[in-house]
Figure (tube, rainbow, N blue to C red):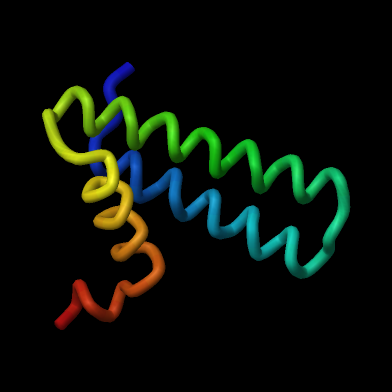
Length: 75
């Protein structure tokens, strides 16, 4: 299944939420969930970048920027 850029943003949000849960309550379950979400995001980035003929790094950074710095998009 090809991932849209919107899908990537949503997957990065899930990874960030999982990371927040892990830092709030470190444990094997929260760590596993965080790593699984991050792996899912990374795999989707590679797939999207390959399909679109774009740099994996640029695709990843664009998705992370929207999630981590939403104020930059609003300006």
